[in-house]
Image 1: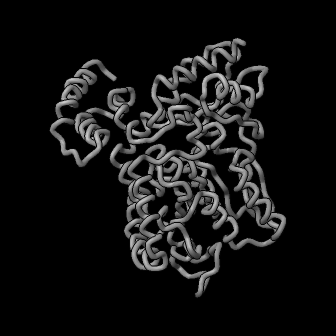
Image 2 (image 1 turned 45 degrees about the vertical axis):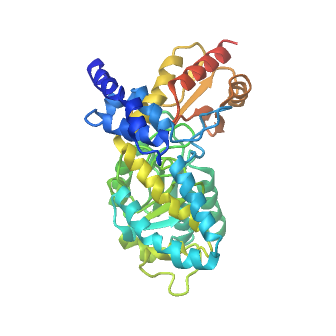
Image 3 (image 1 turned 90 degrees about the vertical axis):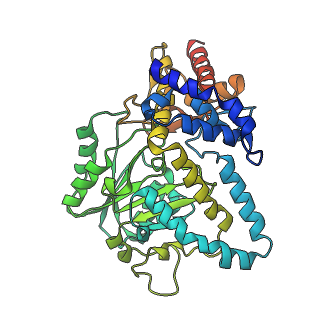
Length: 432
């Protein structure tokens, strides 16, 4: 952040304590201060604000993180902010007053407004959005719903998510389709290389390609649109795993030129655990069989056929709305810049430490919050254990195909002091 921008922010921030005394006592202090911080940040660019700790401190106060552990595995699942937690608990209590009445006749009425809000955030039509439980459910709905026959080919990557890989293997075993696996050498910053790995695997028998928008193992962002354009030239459907991309960095789903897109909202949107979203391009809805049978035609042209889950947790679903509000309060651009800033902060400090190997790009085109680091001569699990035992830092060791290292994923509530401790831990382990 420039010195001039920082001075302006701090000059405005100086009125926090006075404002807090004069504000309504019906609002908690953290919320009042957050309102003020957001107002003071108006006019500052997302880039300038990315390193402004005085601003992000008040965002951090929106979360109830444990003081006994530093959670740097937000890539698995993120905690929800207080407003989302409170909404979910409130709706749960509401449901239990008379479940069949309040669930089906009251809370269920919020589904269509929620669908519209998700569609607005995704930049698509509400009739293309289904609400479910996670990206695995959304992707497997498409994988098992595609009308394929023996001999049809699907292209996917060995670096894709295990649930997705296993779903394709099950269709291969059950229906006789043929899987074509590409093996990506990562990290990569060569767009032509990444696109060609998929294009070279296409044949006249290829019916669909699976592309992971941001690979969970090391945070590699793939050039989805370029791959999708090449696939569509050949009449190939495009399935995008957006588990880690939606609400992580700034884009709209139609920008990707995907036919199908699924995401877990409990990751980067900060929705309650067990909430997800499936996008299906309008003209594709009719041809996909739903995962769960419907009372009428399974090939009807209605996105809602993918929501026939039976009794479901309405209290989780309706609290997604508060997560959307929180995300939009911060702003997509601000959030993306902050997350990339945090990843690069710790990676820049360890990249020249002897034996340290970075498995993630520092370039914002190819990575955002997720980083992966390896230590020469050491197993990922050893660094994982060392950081937890010695520094109470929670990360996750990755040993998947050709990616070996520890995945480190900060979030908007992560402090620079947290990352300084991480750097100290990685450095101590590398030098041991």
